[in-house]
Length: 178
Image (cartoon, rainbow, N blue to C red; front, top):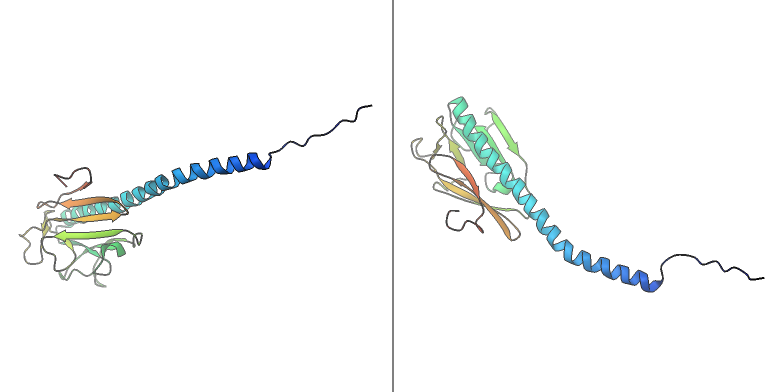
């Protein structure tokens, strides 16, 4: 009589090492592009949030027929969050008795936002009742400029023209117009 030998199915150590090597190579190729994709999504989300806030401040100014400001929450850095509010006393700070239309929380700490506006003494953008930007010096003097948002090697820019209309552009792809 022949005795039957039972074979256990499975992987040998050599086969497991080969599989682990293939998985390691695939991960080393995929992780940097995955990180880049995540950074791109975070940058797009932050850009869209700030762009929406600019449009909200402009539309509220038109709707209410009065000055509406968009300022950093802490008065200094945009990446710490921002506030859209009705600035009744023109001090670029939301006071207790002023209406806060919208408030955005802080962004990813790696996100950099660099503003560049014609009136740069205080960080703000203000719209008058016609929807045009204005400076603190005069409701008739427009304020134009941009925010440069950067995360890792990627960047976006929100540009506000002298009429108060914002647009988003990519400085890496639109070097002449951004």
